[in-house]
Image (cartoon, rainbow, N blue to C red; front, side):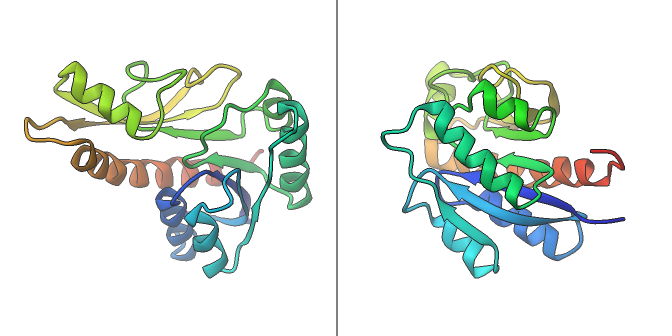
Length: 197
């Protein structure tokens, strides 16, 4: 079966991107990462992509309307023949216009058990801070399809992570990240095995 072409959007270090790169290289995912785009010029994920021989671009957005920026992103992804878009630590809400371009073909990862600790303002370390402040005993990671809301699309996979009494933001984030990597690879592999796109 022909390998699916994947586009990855990042804003930071790219550890989830690295998990995908490794899984594509070892055959765990029947796909290839065609391009990695970032809205942050200094995102280390761009370097990870370049080291793997993947096209990596910083797409500057200052001064652009959201729709105009998303059109620019979509054009690059379409130019690369991307069939699946993965948001791997992408810290920008996509417009309806972008989502229409790739309807039912955008996967996001979120570091909590949606519907808890999600939506506007919940991203990165802020999620783990909120979890610890609330005193909950269980958190986790969620992979979901992207729709026009924020963290509201259909859930594909979830896995719980226990919150320990001695946890800090850093220790909790590290354990949740391990789950994120595994679930994201599973979700992308599952998508790439589908015959129809």
